[in-house]
Length: 347
Picture 1 (cartoon, rainbow, N blue to C red):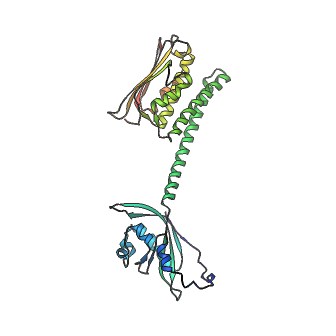
Picture 2 (picture 1 turned 90 degrees about the horizontal axis):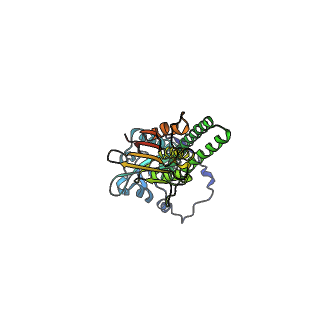
Picture 3 (picture 1 turned 180 degrees about the vertical axis):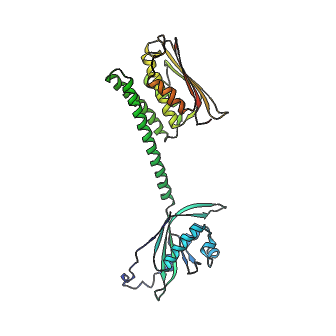
């Protein structure tokens, strides 16, 4: 809500010397870079300087003698706000309208919004009576936009920090619950924290605007021997597709859990095993995708007797973020994890 802020009265008796005769007040008014305009008691335009006319896109002949609310119609609420400010100035009190938006015409038609701080200044005649009011407008549009953007960024940062802390809390709890010793819990926790940190770095580089799915998967698998430009036991195969920041985090953590399991018990636990990660993408009906993690050449696989953090991460958290389904098939020759869903919250 916009408020009129009164300004303390000025002490005109401090002007104890006459103004030099060579000083041209009209020229100073005209050349001021701030938009200035003068109204009479009927709120008709008496005069406006060049900066005001350029800003409003008008000529002096178009507005001189016209009522300010006729020249620039406003809503009932804003008209009441400005009228109160002008009346206060005609009552002898200088005042300020803070952070007030205005719709200004632009060349070629249309309007643009600017944000001004407007000061209403009483102008007195020789008898000391307020005869006119001058409005001085300071354009703070860019500053206001930056402040708005900063507020949005702070809200987004607050949201992300809370989400990250909640994720870290869940990871820590599950790591402690499922580990057989404090050393194992420490190692698992540090590895998972490192995976979270790596995907955070990837997203920061892209200003949290999501990422390419291949970059996310590559980033998660490099610690397990994946080499993007060389021979590797891990291969990635799929088209370019983008994922949101939340999906990138969930996919990265899921691939970390699959790779960790493969390194401990599966295809990456010996020298012959391989992992192939392939995905397809169909944008004819939203942004649907299928991704398959397929292990081969490792030790014989058996289904675990209990659900650990990795299984929970895959079947619950990741499935929720991709708005789809995920299955784990413990084939004797290697684990196969299939997931299908949406990369853009499509349905």
